[in-house]
Image (cartoon, rainbow, N blue to C red; front, side):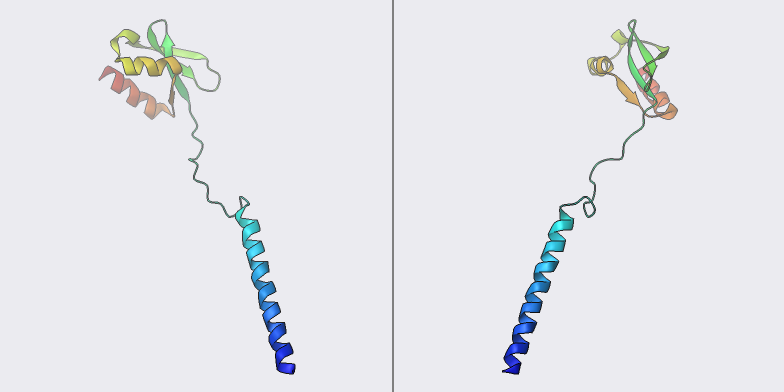
Length: 106
């Protein structure tokens, strides 16, 4: 009789432990604590290139203030680049700006 009571207590304890573990796993898996972010880190931009008086204009990304024009006319660029300039081409830093200027003047 004592063996059956002991067996029952062990069985109930094991069942309660399994339920508790399942609850904890379910609770934390729905929280951001255990989720691995698949989002790209936020990119910080310095400049945006847009059309300005039929030239490529360089603007401050944050303030949208016009800084200067490149000596590149919009008409001299391929249609794809022209369409990108209408919505604005975001530029991360001075190195990226130099690179895109070289691409445009190719």
